[in-house]
Image (cartoon, rainbow, N blue to C red):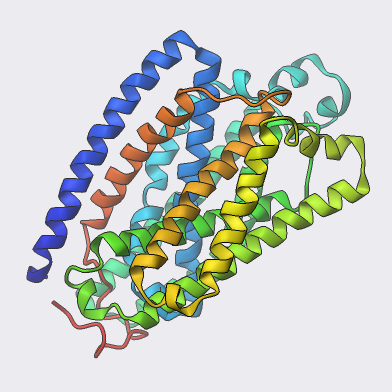
Length: 390
């Protein structure tokens, strides 16, 4: 792979800058944690669920790719592998969430005092069981991420076609378990911020959002480095069109789930359910919700209907970058009203925390990516005439 030195150079520069930004942001967060502890935990959780969502989305898309072997997955497989391997880092970065569990989750106090609907859920919502479940989640995610990427890299070296079957067989039950575990994780980390509320669609909606985040992140990476070898020799308008179509499909699927949840709860008009939306329709929060409706659905939906916007990486990457930004706004709308429902609330740590975690996350992604060929080699599912070895 002698021809991809320019790629390694640009990735190396981005990695260094990302780590620098991550460290600087972490220092600022440390100051914020000292001066406003509760606010630090709130902002940290918001940033954490955003970045871990991309990591988990990478793992989910990677398993889906091994099952369906679509051309869309061929060119981003190594990006997805690198993103999924950051789950080990995110397991470490989850420690501040555990440290602030009593600040973040009201059920930790309700379970101790015992009252109302929350006390009835104490068999599930209690700190020891929460920590045990979290350990199981991360164990599964880390094992799956490292197995899938290790087998793929091994195939680069020895051209063992049996590894392709192993990847597919492992991904089938793995994807089922991934959906179940991801649903429980979204309930534990986000939905239980308001433990009186519940929704059967919530977990699937978060999973769809994670897949969309991972896909749009991969498209942005292709925009930054896709013009360099070896990507420049294999990328075509067909690849961009497939990625654009999948982005459109996930955008519509996410919007369908989000609207279905709203329609079912609002039409049911039960106090124990509709208060969640009432809180998010208070002054300030309703504007954020309108911004999500326009910027996360209508704008990308209309733009992605055009074949022209999906035939070139530049407009597609602009759309993908906008969706990535709106994903953070959506998490902001999901998480923050749990702490300040009556009025819109924003703190400088709500920006610094995602920058700090994001810098460390991106630096680690690039570190993982640089450990293997940018494109997969010796996979029999691939067109070897298209994927030339450099």
